Image (cartoon, rainbow, N blue to C red; front, side):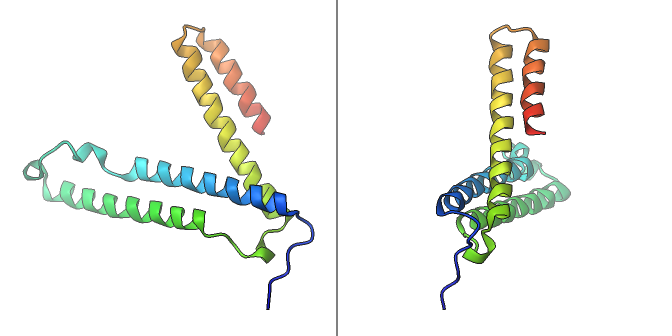
Length: 134
């Protein structure tokens, strides 16, 4: 028996929401892996590590890999049609556009700072972008 397509959301809305959801989940997977993986330990020799540092590095490596793999799996696995109603589409679209605005704002502040623009102006622009989100 085929699942019924939600009547309150169009095919375009559901497709855009799936693409934006995948973007957000892949971005979160990258952030989780980058923050949890022990990159500082990679430049040290194995003999220089204590047992505690070695075990901590192993646990952090396994947890970073597992969390990132779970998020990547969730990004490419789409939910069933009955779960993709208008509220679901709006929630994921809002999250994605918020993440895009924060990324754009942080890149813009960095570029303005490197070009010699006064930092209060850069902070004012970032505050306006955050104001648009909320």
